[in-house]
Length: 607
Image 1 (cartoon, rainbow, N blue to C red):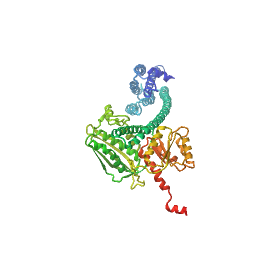
Image 2: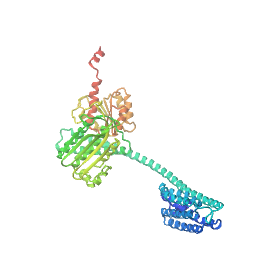
Image 3: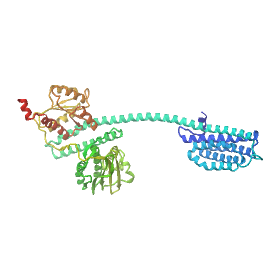
Image 4: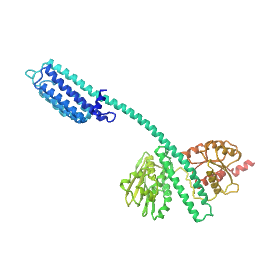
């Protein structure tokens, strides 16, 4: 309670500024003790003992001076200056006492531990180091005058000396207790403040985690809600683009709709990726792949756009071809794709070069692979080169209007590189181009054990196979789009496409008819897609149907989850017609051939 009242007088608060409060309390303690020490010594020497010449006056003057200097320094709220002046004053008094008591041990020496303790609490160990020289001089003075005998005018009566030592020792104990209590009280207050602060931080952390989960849930829900109508837009656009009766104007309009829808889908995917990375919910894949082939395919995708602008796009692969590594090919492709997109966007002449090499030594079985994308574009100002890696950040406001984009690509690149224990750096000069360098540790593999899967996503060859397909979706628009896409892909007179608006209706139809393929939505009322799939597996007629999850839950985690649950395949919304063709061809052609009995098996069964 005493120290809290003193804190109010000195304007100190250990909860706000612990260091200032401690120093203010030490200054108060020095003022009180030095004043008390001077007055008590003067009184003892004047009324109890025979003091040395001038010692009474020295004690009285030092006490009054300490009180006036201390009160002035505290009013001015200069605790450091107050402590320094008090220690200087104490040093002068101690040296005077040592000289006056030459030939004997000065009782004032017992004040030294308290002075040193106060300086240490206020300023730390350095204050003790600075005190070595004056302390050595003080004790040197005592030792140099020790040869003076006890007789004569400077002699001491041992009994009187003992009384003075007891009085000085008592004051020294009070001094040390006062310093200790000031520090203990401030420490207790600070610990209480720390505990309260930790509680507030814990509460804030819980609130932030809840807000982050709410944000992630909101983004996930919005993603589902946006993908549902986007599936109708892009799906029906793909269906109409296959209509040979359209004129050129109609085709250009459809291409514009398709490009706009895909741009919206790309933005949606970027926001989802950024949200997952910030929530530390992004899981990296770890499998073998050909990095050289990945670089080549990604570069080939952007080459036509670069050549249209008169920009050469080259690849310098120093790793060799093939270059098998172990890592996450999807996320590496995403990084390369974003860097090339920016390079093509901001380069109007010259060239863009992609370099793939290794740097450093192999550590823990991993090689640091370096990918550089260098362009001769407009460049980036030096004061903007760090901020462009922040989400939704562009070099300036006009860049967004002139070149388009949201500023998410580079933010995702940096976070993905960090997630892979790598880094991305930038070197750029205005008007002379930019070089983005990505370093990631990857395990080199001699030969890949993964089978090479080749697809032709641009194939328009129809699937000629009869079959019965069930389209299940609670949104009628999605039913119509998927049905039209299936009828466009599969060309057979015996093709039957049924629709169901929910899980229960799908199970009822699967119980009545034998379906070859079921395109099943996941999030539906009454019965979700997973439950419907499990029920269909238990029916007699459709137990062997190829059940494909068609959902707006479009992450790799969802893909693995649904395949593990028992789905035959997975299609994210909006459904790409090439992916749907692949799934239908496997289900209606490839799998049937695999299930069909061989000639020998047919002869055995017939015999």
